[in-house]
Image (cartoon, rainbow, N blue to C red):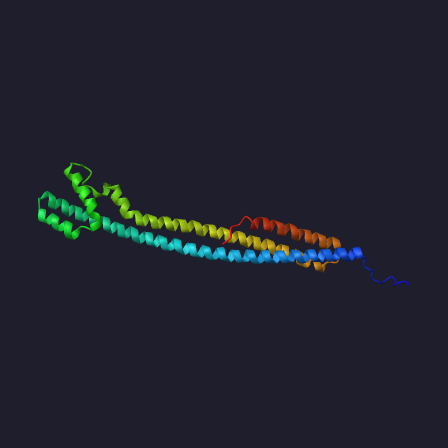
Length: 219
């Protein structure tokens, strides 16, 4: 019995099997692309948060470094003034004034430096009278400021790295979203060739995204 010239052809088992296989492959690619897109978006958000945190840390450390530098400068200026007074008292042989200065005006942590300075003067060291030539003393006073600056620089580098990682994950998100699109539109085409072509593009795109994902750090 004829079905007529306008009747739809009956699918063979091979055609049905091929169509089912393509649909299953499309579902698989859709699932993988969806997971990869969500993961990339999540990681981008995490790295963006890290960038903000590290940038804030860098700013705070720079402010702290500036504060400590100002404090160290004040200490050095104060110590230099005390040394000048102490030297004048020593030159005038005012022993009681020297004892008063040591007991009441000299910072306790500066006493070893003052003792070393006084010993160098008595030994005839020409440069000993200038406190600002004592690199050990100056380095010790300004070390907290330098340490804070180093911490700020390190945080700034981490912030830049986090920014790059966030941008890389955004790019991967766009790539996986593209794979998601190609895998999703396959059902809109009846041609097996068109479906295979779209699935191939989706698969290649997803594979490229996966190759980038495995090289990116996890937040």
